[in-house]
Image (tube, rainbow, N blue to C red; front, side):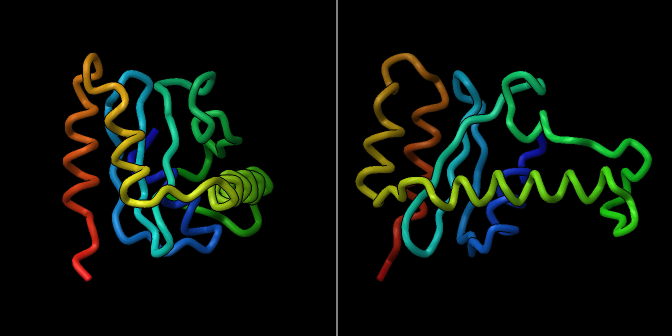
Amino acid sequence: MSDDSYATALTMAGATILAFKAFGSYQGEWWAKLADGYVTGYYGSCSGCDEVEGLTTCYEHWDGHHEDCEACQKHFAELLAVGQRYMEDKRYTQEEAEAKASKDLDWDMDAKEMVAWLIGNRSTS
């Protein structure tokens, strides 16, 4: 998974991302701060455990999307669908996001970094 694959999917689905970060926690977890709260998800290291890695890939066009390529069109349609699903998911408030990220502090070495990132992205208004 590239760190920005899920951010790209969210943006394609209409999200305005204020901050995004992927963490190497137990499963691999990412957080996105949107104007109306946080969204989170998991990623993996292979197509079997990472939704984006499992999407159709066009091996002929590594330089980007080609309008006339059926595989490229399918990949971007699938990526858009991933983003739309996350946009329909629950939004976490600041407090809910910090509580969710804190639940595994006793054993997940990356949980502390997630909580610190969430705290660092608190609104100052």
